[in-house]
Amino acid sequence: MSLLRRMRDITVASLNEHLERSEDPVRLIDQYLAAQREQLQQSERLYQQCVTHAASLRQQYLTALETKEKRENQALLALKAGEEHMARIVLQEKLQAEEKSEQYRELYEQAKQSILDLDEELQQLKADYKEVADKRSYYLARMESARLQQRLHARSSVSQDASPRMFGRLEERVSDMELHARTLRDVRRMGRESYYGAGNPAVDAELEALRSRLNQEGANNHEQNIPLTKR
Image (cartoon, rainbow, N blue to C red):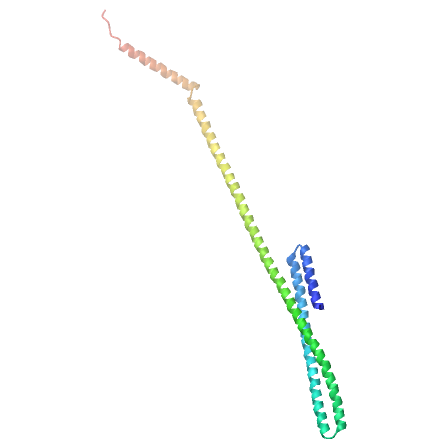
């Protein structure tokens, strides 16, 4: 396992561990994403450096291979010309170029494999970053939905609680007004009864006067109706 992959695994494990104890998971995720962005930037810079280095190794390998083939042809021409001593010198350079080309070829193959490994890990890092970022957006959306639901239920609860209280107070007020009206009516009725009813001296005197008047009128009428007798 490469160092980069180990760092990624340790970071993800640490994130999961801290999320279980964190009181502000979103803030912790933001910190993790910031660290991941920095790591991605560093890894991408390293990747570019590896690509540049691999290109340099490839050029060194191709140059040495070209030199080897060139010296081999020169040695062949020298040998045909009967210049064996020159052919030996050129062949020596050809062997040196061949050794050099083989060395750079091995380095270039290693560099290519390193680039492949680094590219795979970079893609995994990007996938992990995207997964965490998507989950952050999802949980933020859930939190916003829950917050709006809380506000909605709170408003509904207040409205439901306020309506009975509001109509209850209105009922009490109307009942008080009705009671007050009934009380005034009863008081007025009692006043009228006490003034005009039995037990009122003024009314009793008037009533007695009317009775006397009726009795007097009755007596007069009776006398008028008696016939006169002969003496």
